[in-house]
Length: 261
Image (cartoon, rainbow, N blue to C red; front, side):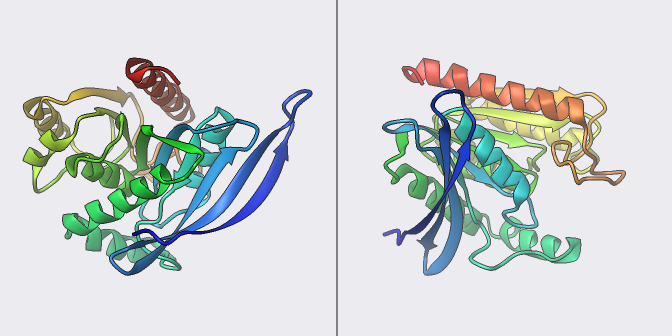
C-alpha cells in the first residue's frame, strides 16, 4: 500500500486567452518501508486523466534536469512524475557519492526493479494520470532503471532509455515486457561501448519485444544534460533536440496504437 502526501504549487504560464496552470506536487510514497519523494507535474487546465510519464533520474538523484523535463511534458498534456529511486533526502554531493549510490542498485537489480515499479504504481494511482496510457523514461542511471522496469513487467505502453546504461545480469527477463522499447544513444558514448549495444539489441530481439534503437553521431554520454562538460559526458544540443523529437514521436505512435491520446 502506497502512502501518499501532496503539497501543490501552481505556476501560471501564458497560453493565450486561457492560461495553462502547470501544477507541481511533492508526493511521498513507500517501497518496503523506505520513504521516497517524487514530484508530480501536470497542466491543471486539462480535464480528466491524461497519458502519464514516469521520469527516472540520473545518478546524482532527482534534479533540475528531470523537473524541467516534467514541466515540458506537462505543457504538452502529459502527467509527468519525477521518481525517487534513492529515498527521501538521499542525494549525491559529488560524482564519488553518485557512483556509490548507483552501484548499490546496479548490484541489486531486484531493489532497482522494486523502486521502479513503486514509482509506476504511484503515478498510475493519481486521478490526473490514465494508468492504461503510461510510459517510463530515464536518463543515464535512470535509463538502466527504466529498462529494469520493463524487465520486471511494468504495465507501460513503452519505455525510453536516454543515454542510459544497457547491460543487465538477466537479459531473459525482457520477455516479461508487453510494451515497446526506445533507446536513444550517443554513437560515441564511451560509457556504453558497442559490444554492450549489440548485447542489448540481441536481448530485445530474443525477447520478441518491439524496439527502436537510435544512435546520434558525435554524441557521447549525457548528451541531453546542459551541465555535462567532460570528454566522456558532454551536452550535444542537436542530439538533445533530436532525442526530444524522437521520444515524442514514439509516445504519439504508441498512444495511437493503444487507442488515442
